[in-house]
Image (cartoon, rainbow, N blue to C red):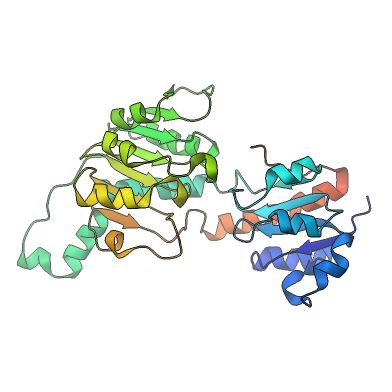
Length: 312
């Protein structure tokens, strides 16, 4: 199959960057002159990008003969999927290979908030174990009720880990799935039922501020929120207000609105644990994600189909 030009819109990672150059002779857009797209965009058949860079309507318009997009990352809210599919362009992301690492981090945050691990660490480092004595009691994790917003691949991996903690689990999403956990069609009802609510759904207009002040109020003063999905899913101002008023018990956040960075109102709280969007940030997973970006393009060249197409 004749490919035309393979274009890489931005750096992805050392392995992907090398393989795209060596195996596919990819053109690195950031190394080209400013007018490259206007002059040669019509020669591009395949695009490698990432969830950080995306591929919007303007980029698609500049590539009139584009046939496939391979994006690093499981999220696709920065990709104009509808416009691409309207033109018959296949779009791939990198799911599956990061599920376990993101689920592991969700559980790390869940346990860290419930057992106040980071606050206890600071207690010891500050010498307060000696000067103030024992640390305040925390909350047990085992046997709690776990609610999951978004039972996709990552949500399912989170739920499987909950079985080892003897948890009862329910989930909310667009539709029920064939799983041994109860589907809850109402997100407010799920929040009111569970002790811990984990956000594992994607971003975009459909889920923007889905976890609102009302959902946080339903979660209750001992409830814990964990977000490893997208920062836009949680109304961050409402979260700060709920924490300050004691309307929820704590939060573990790997994603935030306006990241990078976090507001002081969250950074300064002992009942909040924040990580810098590191759900997939392990050596093994990042290498697997980078390889999959390249493998999707190679598969398209081989048989006309990407390996992991995005199906919203």
